Length: 318
Image (cartoon, rainbow, N blue to C red; front, side, top):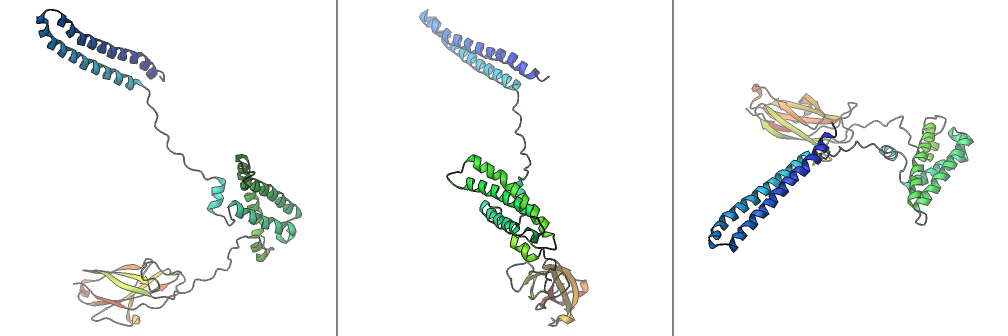
């Protein structure tokens, strides 16, 4: 079944092309025929226009035959397959390290980091919960990496081969350092000072609590419509931004409805807690024509609140 289309191509294409060739040959013959009567009697000249028209039709028909032949050939030609969809990119080992790394990943940065790491461990491996053989292994691997790095970075020795050698050695050295670093990091017998000296990241086991917000929100009534109002807030430290202040979990919004604005937030009732500094406040028909006053304050995740905002008032649409 796979050979049916190619066989038709080779069998059908010559036949179609021959048809076009015969049509062209007939056209040439028809064009020459009007010239012959010119050498004969004078009445033969009357036949010349008809012969020319016949020749033009023959040329036209031959052109159509040739086009039909061409289309037949193209019809049976095998189609070019569509380009394959791009394959999903798989991260290389170096890209995986770069996604999350506490070590410098540039060649020069890693070389300096590795030198400090192996030197401290080789000088006193037991201080890091290791043995002398571990220091020897690190020193030997560092020498291999360092020589490959130098050969690939110096102009006199930099070639494709030396660069390839360096690129192959780097993930091996990174993996070795990471393995020892993980072993040392979880060893509680090793002091944090020694870990930091190696360049390790020390987790904060006693996180500093987030303080209560120290700034005030600045309120504004953005929209007044029948039955509701839209209130927005910014922070006084960044009045041109709508973001919450650092450490804030959201906004506590209070309001008071009466015949006149109020100045004391203690007389306002809690309305809502919002994560985004915006809220839609709804009203009942009985509130139409009254005045609403809003107050707000930032709060952190522990429920500690910041200072009160200034009150902002507006009439409730009827």
